[in-house]
Amino acid sequence: MMELIASPEAWAALLTLTALEIVLGIDNVIFLSVLVSRIPQPQASRARQIGLLLALVFRIILLSILVWLIGLTQPVITIKDVALSWRDIILIGGGLFLIAKATHEIHGEVEARDADEKSKPSANAFFWVIVQIIIVDLVFSLDSIITAIGMAQDLEIMIAAVVIACLIMYISSGPVARFVAEHPTTKMLALAFLVLIGVALVADGFKFHIPRGYIYFAIAFSAAVEMFNVLARRNRKKAAG
Image 1: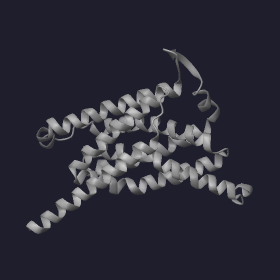
Image 2: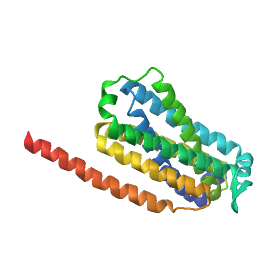
Image 3: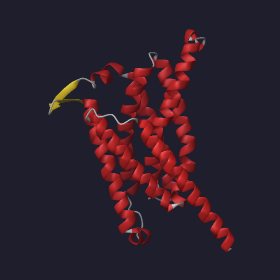
C-alpha cells in the first residue's frame, strides 16, 4: 500500500480513472434525476440515496470478482458473424431498457401531462423506481468497471477511484434532480439523452463503438443551449414582474 501512495504513476492512474468514472457516471445521474422526478420529494431524496449507494456497492462487488468479470467478455453466441459475450448481451439489454423507458416517459410528458399532474403517485411507485435504478445501476456498473480494468492494474486504485466518483455523483445528483424537477423542458432534454445513451449501449453490444466524446459533446452543447433558455425565461419573468 505504501508503495502505491509513494508512486507518481499510481496517483496519475487514480486521477485519470476517477475522471473517467465521473464522466461515465453522468449517464447514471441523468437517469436517477428523471426517475425520481415522478415521486414525492421525501421519497425522491431517499430513492436517489439508495440508487447511488447501490451504484457504489455494485461497482465494488464487480471489482472484487475480476476473474469472473473478465470471463464475461468471452464470446458465448454468434449472430451473423458477430460474436457476443455476456457483457455484450447485458449492454444490449440495458440499452434497449433505457430506450424503452425514455420513450415511455417522453410519451407520458407529451400526451398525458394533465392526467399525470392530477393523479397521485401509486403506493408501489417508490418500489418500481428502486427496481429500475437497480437494473440501470447494474448495466452502468458493468460498463464502468470493465473500462476501469483496462486502465489500471491495482485493485486499490480502482476501488479508490470508484468511491471518489460515487461521492461526487452523490453531491451533484441533488442539484441536478432539483433542476430537472423545476424545469420541465430540461426533463425532456434528459430523456432525449437517455435515448442517445441507450442507442450507444446497444451499438457497443453489437461491436459498433460510438465514441463517447461525440455523445458527451452533444449533451454538453444541448445543456448549454437549455441553460441560456432557462436564463432568458427567468429574465423575461423579472421584466414582466
